[in-house]
Length: 236
Image 1 (cartoon, rainbow, N blue to C red):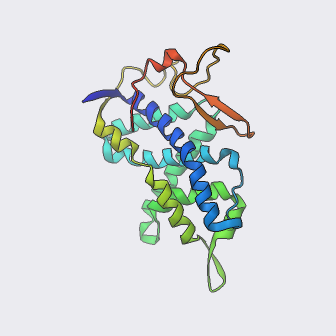
Image 2: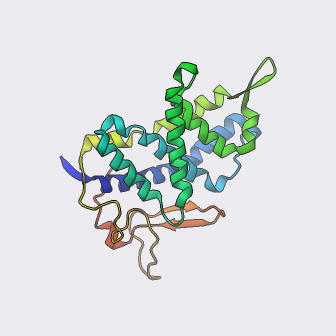
Image 3: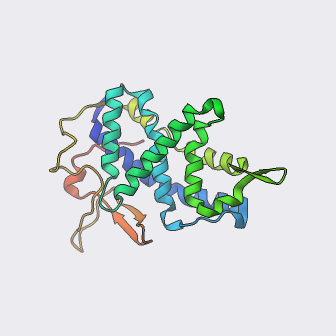
């Protein structure tokens, strides 16, 4: 069985989730739009795929403690957060992932009072996407709003959201993931995706991703050649 360091596994995991979210977003949006028509209005479509990726990362991190020893799960989570704490993604990305995890854990603690861990993160993401428009999906009983998202919307989206998850389980099944030699406080080696400025005639390496920043501008990230060589390509 091939070996990956925890840093490499975290890096490949983030790259995989971001790409999967970008690929899945158009289909998810069209399906929900076709099903709920003019009621389903995304507040900011430029960041929707990015928020989908952050929610998926937050959900996937919940599986770490069930797949790895406690100390290793904690290290891997730190590496994942380090990978997304970039200049462009910054504090927003890290804070959102942490809030998704907090939402999930609160739902577990409140199961006796009706908490639903399986829908906790999808529900929070719908709130993020729809903003004030979420009120259009407030489930009503006898004409009175309940503050609960329409089960039809939540169930449909949850089924699509969970369909592409399970990356850490596949990584653990396919690779022996071990602690690396690089400490968390290192500065010399890049921890995650970073910008590269190639020459005009330089072909961009594999691993290029596109996303929208907070101002709606299309941004592009890729791994420069010297960084690509540091990581083992993983098929999830």
